[in-house]
Length: 103
Image (cartoon, rainbow, N blue to C red; front, side):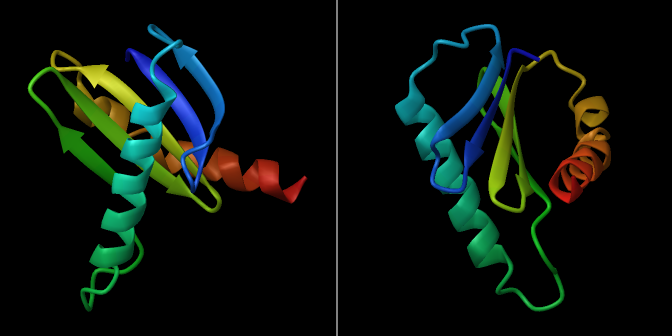
């Protein structure tokens, strides 16, 4: 993984870590907007249910975005990343989020 950024639903950064942690916040805001709009529109398709995560594949990287109540976690990984392994963490991340909200 190259970077993890946690934002609110409007794309405002709450927490960031990893390589290039000083990245352009405008890019993060744009990616969060893409996630929010994709989630909102896809939930209109009958039978799909609520969007859990979205995987974006680009020429040079993957972006995995996970919706968690009022937050969005964006994980940026290189093309050589084992994206299936990273995606397998999604349920654990969502469980940790719920534990934090209960305290």
